Image (tube, rainbow, N blue to C red):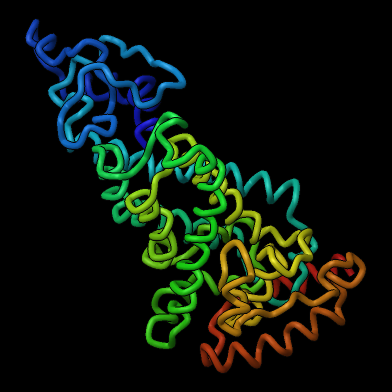
Length: 351
């Protein structure tokens, strides 16, 4: 995260902090250390002189970097900056990814499904907009720890434990996080916590891409913990770290887009995740079906989902609804979702 923070410091935050918390008069130069950057750059709790966040490029700090009473390595500034990045930049990434998927990938015939909610997209966006700033509060301590050098992030490929680790770290990260997210997600379906923490995300029986981040903030944070814990226990390249987090956000949208491309017994794609939203107690995995198979919770997606003519057929929907209502009654009791008249109106329009 120090790479991201340095970019934001250079192009945005330096000037903002210099304006909001200025150092008056010539004293501001007392903050100058030749080429000071945004972070401690892996030097634990010891302020550095000239240590860019990465060797791949060098961002020259402007004069604003030395004109605030909160210099770049101030922990309170780092905390506030990382919170704003996690919240606001996270919100921008969510809207960009979800909107692109909504217009170019998502099958809009889903609007006519009997279990599509009244004003669902607006409700999904509202839930996500509430969740992200709260999640950021719990996430920022991990990022601050990383920026201040407590994680095992490395910059040069030569710093890896062995050269092949630069490649191995990607499947290792996926396997590690997939394992723990499976058990966290399954735990969130326990009756004692489901209705409070996880039901807000299961409000969407037929999710759109905007449902990807539409959950209770503690639910979203709990399932993100493995991502944040990994670099504190295992080496991870700084650029790989940023790439993986971008991938996670795109994947989260992908499994909610309703376009069933991956008919795979290994990949936990959109079809598998649709089974989870429809029938609740199956396919808890994030990336693979491995742990669902091990835990006895795997459910193979219906073949009808992979054929356009049957995917949106009334016969298939009726079958889905009948089973879904049976399972939903067992898991939640009375269904308090508001389907309204919109789905029925759209069904007539598109039939």
